[in-house]
Amino acid sequence: MKKLDKLILMSFWGPFVITMSVVVFVFLMRIMIFYIDDFVSKDLGITDYAQLFFFFSLITVPTALPLAMLLSSLMAFGNLGEFFELTAIKSAGISVVRAMAPLFIVAVAVSVFSFYFNDRVSPWANLKGYSLLYDIKTTKATLKIKEGIFYNDLPGFSIKVDKKEENGKLKGMVIYKHSNRSYEVGNTEIILADSGRMYSINDNRYLVIELYNGTRYTDEVNSGSARPAYISSPIGGSSVPNYSNFSRNSFKHFRLTESLSSFGMKRTDEGQFKYHEFMKNISDLTSTADSLRSSYNETRKNLVAGSQQYYSYNYREGTDKTLKKGPWIDSLLVKPVSDSLKKEILMNTKSAANSMLSYTKSQKDYLQTKLKDATKYELEKHHKYTNALSCLIMFLIGAPLGAIIKKGGFGVPVLVSIIFFILLYVLTNQGDKWVKEGMLVVPVGAWMANTVLFLTGLYFIDRARSDSRLFEKDVYIMLIKRIKEKWASRFGKSQLIQS
Image 1 (cartoon, rainbow, N blue to C red):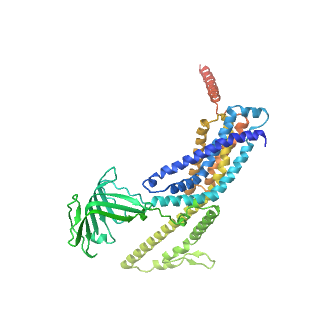
Image 2: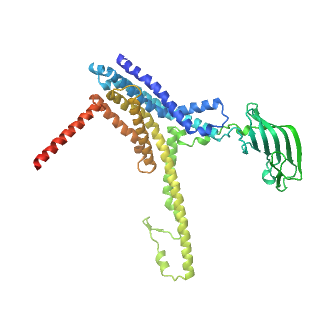
């Protein structure tokens, strides 16, 4: 390896590692902020968050690689141009294309790595990450009781507290305990207490409720009894059932212990998420898309045969194996038809038409669903390739742009990189949208963004080879000045001719 190649590679790897880390962190924070409402009030451990961050960091890598490649290559050649190192390289007879050769090899290697990552690691990370996120979202919030409001998330209980003090003591507690027959006979147990406190034990697996100076009302009737009326309680003005068979016990100290197992996170079977296209590799995507296409074509093929059941009269098959009109129309026209028969015929006709319409709509919806699903899987398969190749295309844009702009650091390169990355994102989404709407075939829509940016990269390489001053302000100032001079000269000549 020549010293020139080492110089260019050393100027590339530093910005690449930093940019990659920053981009992954930014995308990770964007995802975390988007789902922040699902994390709050959940009793999650450090292990759960570490796993979630790890999986979603892997998910963001395919998106971050093209942007990191664009920004780091632009910064590398921008720094070389800003400190006149690129000028020295050119003066030594080495072309810009030759100077890009070592980074081109790196870009190809990154593209190969990105393809492997998209095909093997990303489906696994998506499956693990989103299944874990689903489990977190469906986990109940931790026990948080507000003053004056009944808390009903603890199974079998409704708890209200009049006042919460700073030392953890609770004033004016009302606890309604339900059973499986609560909808038939109401609350089976009601506890009223002047004060109490709540805490968890055994690694938050059990909740302890300690109550002081209160009364406990217990329902002793059978499940067939009617729902009671309520009367005022002597403690705090709360209501208690007016059962004649209620037992009443006063206490100075009473303790309840209940399991918090329903608040723990339960892992869902990951097989429930494998249907999604993001959870599949190229082989699975191809197999699923082909199966859906086959089902779509088979259904279309059988549409005419399936619709025959809704017709009272059919076409007949001729001797030459072609369909010809039967003689039933002429024979029906010459027969006398009474009003009652005519009404019956119209009713049967309307019923047959409605049945045919329903059949047509259901088959149309079925075919559209099959086609839409097949298109999604085919798009994702193509994006396995386009995402990988976009790393190389972003290098073809970033390296010549850095040589043209001759600005390093995180100023202009970041601005230019964001512009082209947004362009890549917009064109990709627009192509996908047109494919899903049936305006473009899948390969054209999937590769539209890469094609446009690849041609843009070739244009910038050509400008860099000819030492173009494409982004220098004085070039456009002089151009505008020449246009004004030509306009003034032509305008002046026309005035002389008119005079």
